[in-house]
Length: 161
Image (cartoon, rainbow, N blue to C red; front, side, top):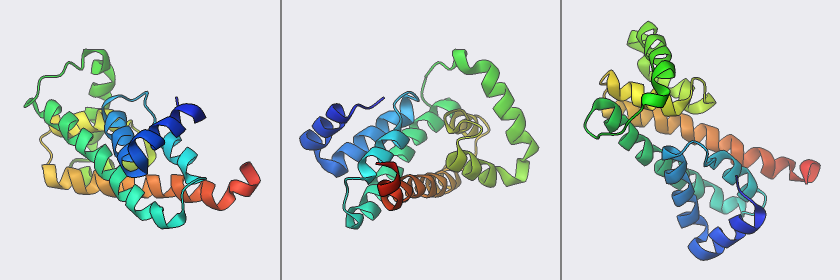
């Protein structure tokens, strides 16, 4: 998780844009690095004018990492997913039930996190979902999710902080 000192150091060293991109790329590969916590924390300190660029950079960084995971699921890159094998089978079964609505399923996962977008990304590669469709639906879900995470605390920071 992020501590306030570490966050301040990251933003000082890399800037808001680079820091957002870096955190979101890393969180796309490593589920324990939580981009959501990062966005909530910076939302209370950012100027509202920076929200749109940060949202675009964050969603893009996250999806670039997810494209790599998608390619791994497709077998183009070699990454071991053995520890997720049981969960992957569950996700693949769910995706098969949604057959013609895979894009909607992907959007729901990328927006809500259920089933985990990490696993859905790999499964999308395994079923050979169209990469452009994958990116568009995933980006839309992540963008909306991140929008809520930035704006909600911003408007309610007097209540919470």
